[in-house]
Image (cartoon, rainbow, N blue to C red; front, top):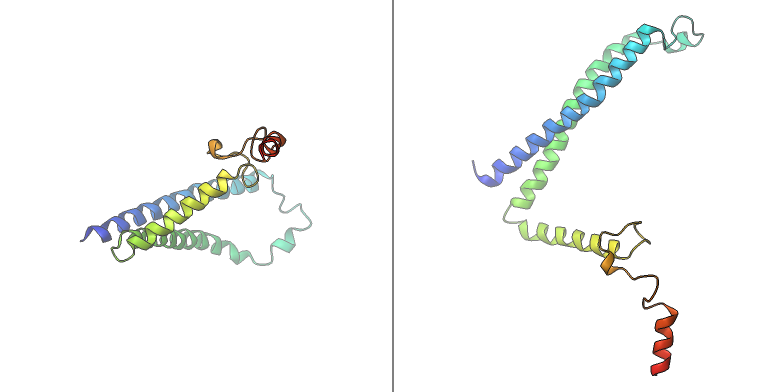
Amino acid sequence: MPTRIRIPLIIGTATAFLTSVYLAVTFLPSTTSTILRLRCGQIPTMANEEFNKYRCAPDQVSVILGSMFWGCFLSSILVGGFVGVLVFISLWQATVYFIARVIALFIGRYLFLDSKGSKYTKFSPFPFLCRSLGGGLDSPVYANRVQDHS
């Protein structure tokens, strides 16, 4: 198998696996804590007057487990496939020049917008590109120097 196909498959599979692990780590504690709260009585059931309103479709409980499985499965495949396609496009010889230009454009936009200072972001990673509040081009001291030499 060529390298330009093997690398996206490996990265896509790893991303899909990490997505499924993240979803499992997110879903299981929530479901377990809800079941334990229901069994301990923290969630009122029979004593609550609104319980009959929620009891209208008791067969829908079995749909939750299937939805959790298929949602996790399909989202893992979609995220892994999307990342794999992006990596494939960035490694393919026909599109590598275009992708490099797009990445350079995004890096340039990031540097430009962040160098503007606190107007766009609170903290700039490049403070040497930002104007200082005292002594910059827009300060009155600079304006006086320009007027004196003209």
